Length: 107
Image (cartoon, rainbow, N blue to C red):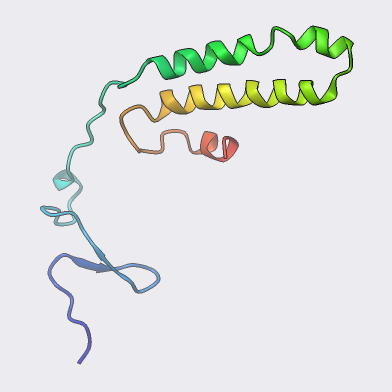
């Protein structure tokens, strides 16, 4: 005898059994509501953007001195600060993918 499915089990593409949330009967109107909580730590995007732009301050002097290692570090820290700032705003309080293209860019 095979595995008997219970009332709320569903087969997915790869034939694995997946549990549906309790109280969900397949109707869209029955899905649990998604709550968008306000950002818990608003300091993170603030300081991420500030630090991203502050790291550009010594850029000119290192550009003239042709200091390649420091320039690479400056650009890397700048882009990391921008990515952390945007990520903390886009995914504040939820895990829904509102920006799928940004997901591909920031990986």
